[in-house]
Image (tube, rainbow, N blue to C red; front, side):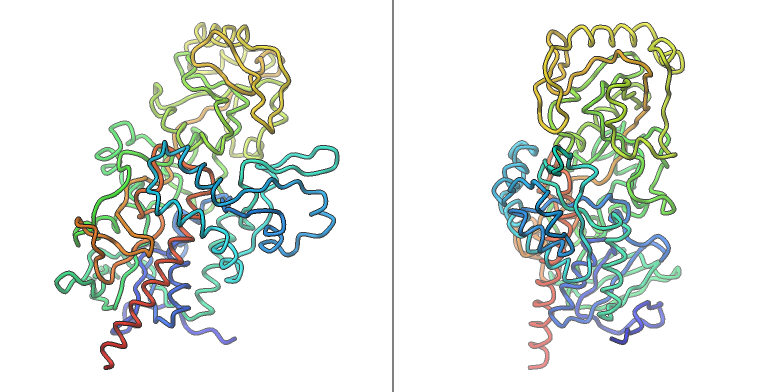
Amino acid sequence: MERMKTLVTINELQSHYDIVVVGAGNAALCAAIAGNEQGAKILVLERAPKEKKGGNSFFTDGAIRAAYGDLENIRKVIPLLSDEEAANTVMPEYDAKEYYDDLMRVTEGKSEPSLAKTLTEKSLETILWMKDQGVVFELNKGNQSFVENGKRHFWGGLPLKTQEKGIGLMRSLFERAETLGIEVCYDARAVELLMDRAEVKGVVAEIDGEKVDIHSSSVILANGSFEADKSKRREHIGEEWQAAIVRGTEYNTGDGLDMALAAGAQKFGQWSGCHSIGTDSNAPKVGDFKKPGDIYKKHSYPLSIMLNKDGQRFVDEGADFRNYTYAKYGKEILKQPDHVAYQLFDAKTRPLLRDEYNLEEATFYEAETLEQLVNQLPVDKDKFLATIEEYNNAVQDGDFNPSVKDGKRTEGIVPPKTNWANTIAEGPFYAYPVTCGITFSFGGIHTDTEGQVLDETEKPIRGLYAAGEMVGGIFYHNYPGGSGLMSGAVFGKIAGTSAGRYSKKMSDAVSK
C-alpha cells in the first residue's frame, strides 16, 4: 500500500479537519486510528519535536493489564505462542470482574464505576484491536512469572506486555498512522479551543512561533496530565512534589487540562494524587529519550527493607505484590529526609532481583559486612544498624516464596513486614538509593463512557473528547500495574470512534 505524505508543516495544514487530536502518545494515536476507521480526516498535533515524540508511552516498560480470561485468549493476542510453550504455561484466569475488583480495591472504592466498568470490560477487545493495528504483544515473563518443574507460572493479572516496551508500542502505532495517511504536525503546541457558543470548532496552536487557527468538527485532547510542570505539582499535589523526578516526557505540563477547563469542562478525580514510584536516585530529572524503557525503576522492594537517612523504616515493604503497591510507595519515599531511601538486600535475595538492578545505570553500594556497607552511606549509621538488628530479630520462621503472598512476616515492630520477611544477615550486602519519580497525575476532567467531555452540569461539550491521562476519576491513591496503558488505549479508541461519528453527523448536516 502506498503511503501518503503524513508529516505536515504549518504551510501544509488543510483548512478544515474532521478531527484534531492533541497529543501523540498511546491514547492519542489509538484515538486517531479509531477516528480514521470512521472515515474521518485527521490531524495530530504533537508539542514535542519529532525526535521526542510518543509522550509518556514511549518510556513505559510495556506491561498492559487486560481481562484476558484464559490462556486461549492470550494465544489470540500472541498467535506465535507455540503449542509446546502453551502446554508448559500455567496461566490463572483473570476476567473483567476480577480486574474491576482489583481496581476498586486499590483505589479504596473511589474509581468512578461506569468508567471502571468500561475500562475493564473493554480491555480484551481493545488489546485484540491494537494487535490488528500492528502492535505486537509478548508474555511478560521477566516480571510476572516463575518456572517450577519445567512449567512457567504467571501471577498478578499482568501476563501481557508490548514487544520492545513503549518503544515498540509507539513505533507500531506511528507506522499504522502513517499507513492510514493520518497527518502529524510536530513542534505544534495547542493552547486554546476554538469555540462557537458552547460548541468546539477547532484549536489554536503555536507553530514556528506563530499562532494558527486550525478548524475542525471535533477535538480529542490526549496530551497528558500536568506532572512535568513543577508549579502545578506544588499547587495541586503538595510542596514536596517540586523535588520529584519526572519519569516521562517533559512536555506534559497540563496544556490540555487548561484548554478544557477554560472551555467549561468539569474538574474530576483526585487532583491531589498521582502515580509515582521508587526510582534510582541518580535517574535523569526528566525522561531521557536516548535511554527509554523504564530502566531506572527499582521494583524488587518487596524483598527488601527500605530505610531513610535517619535509619527508619516507613512502609510495609511486603504488604502486597508490587503490582498493587508500587504506584503509592513513591509518595512515601518523597516524604523522607532529602527525598531518599535505601533498599537493602543480602546474599539470599540479591539473585532474585529484577533485571533493572543489573543494568549499568543502577546505582548501588556493596560490602561484605553491614558495618562496611553503612559506612559508605550518608545516613545515621548507629540508627541504621540498630533498625536492621531490630528487624532481623522480628523475622518469624516460615517458608519463603516470592511468587505468592507467603505470610512470612515480622512480629513486634512497626511498620511490620507482612510477607517475604527474610533476615538481612548474609554477606555480601547491597544498598540501592531510590527517590520518587512521578509518572502522571490522577486529576483530570470529567468524561462519559463515550469519551465526551462534560461541563459543570455534566452535559457534553459538543465536539470535545478526551482520552488517556486527561480522563479523571479512574485512579485514586494507587492503581493496578499496567492499567494506565490499558486505560489510554481503551478510552483513546472510544474517543476516536465517538468523535468520528460526531464529525460525520456534522458533515452530513452541512451537506443537507
